[in-house]
Length: 309
Length: 266
Image 1 (cartoon, each protein chain N blue to C red):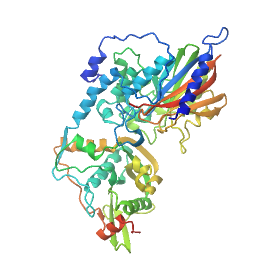
Image 2: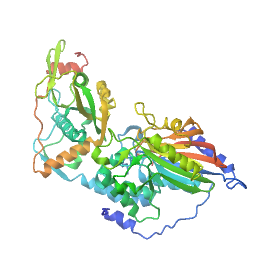
Image 3: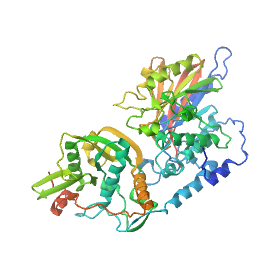
């Protein structure tokens, strides 16, 4: 990431610091930082040598340090992930995703969504990994699995672990988070998603975003998307989402392993949506800052932060 | 549902919580983005013993390979590559539920020979250090022949499974014949399932026709895991890993040399 983008990312925080945290009248004002990863693919350790530009980058122990530093510095922080936590290193073959999810809880993730590779060992093993994370004894609470376009009626153990959305309250900002997953066809073998069927992600998002806005009264709507950034031959991707589903402030993307230096701003019916994705393997940590006043986004920016040792 | 945590991790998980939530400290500290990040000690304490376990697993025996499997020198066939492409084709079939007629990988991706004797997990990691994934696509018969031709012109023939390839004549005037492995002709219009790697399908190693593959099925299985699984199956059954038969590629040495010198055209 270049310095310009990083400085830009500080802009929102600077604006936010001038906004009074509690307005005397009307809804409050505040700021929030979204930290995020996607497609971490069991990269527990940093990439070894011989991996080109990403050699030596990443690693969950370093990510933990960076998250801790930013949490201490910023206070109002959500740590999120856009799916495909599983598959890619011997850690997955040996620990079946349990280690990934347990470490994510230790690092302090608030929520993730499910990518196609999270089904690689079937629904049963996915549920086992989720349960092992829930049962871990740790001061951090278990994180949430968010998805609104999988119908899990045929997989009750998975169904009870997936929520359509999550609402979190911060000083002056109420945040609603949901998630969507990519179609199984051609990506997940039928036996591995038994009992789970896929629904149109945009149509599934519409009522959830509406509920978050009108019933839950959130100030900021965030979508964890495992649809891909710019997928030419698919009907659904992150760049098309803002035009199809109004009212989303931030899309934390995954699936296409797209390395962006900073979020891309996409116009939509109710303003702008920040669309971001930070490659894969935990090489970078994404950061988006939002400053809100009286429930409206006044400034938004972000940057990819390299995870280097 | 039983938890199978490593003992080290479990012990750590059960430690009393010394680190109660601390009140947030507000500071004006700015974190330079280029600063090296130290490992978080709590997380690293979990990872370190597991990393040791993974490393130790590299010494685990898999299967006996009395003759070894070798990539072959110029003019020799790449039996190691034949084996890898055979395993790819075999592994792809149950995933797509229909016959997979052809598989191709790239010789450049096979990083070490398998020496005769007892194979260990680490040997497969040396052979296949990359995280390349098995992908199944659809091609026409004509495209399969074109894929073989592109691999031949670029590298003297990439390891493949399901076909027989014969080049006859001289570097100046040569003919290429590609048939199915049983010698039957390839109908140019027929549509077949083809197993390859995400690397080649993505345009790696200049086999451009592979990029035309339709209905891609990304299996999520790395080639390495597939080879490990195959070795384990043989080993458990008490069978040896033996090289596949020769005779898949028949290319005269003068033509191979002309390919190497980039003076050969088809």
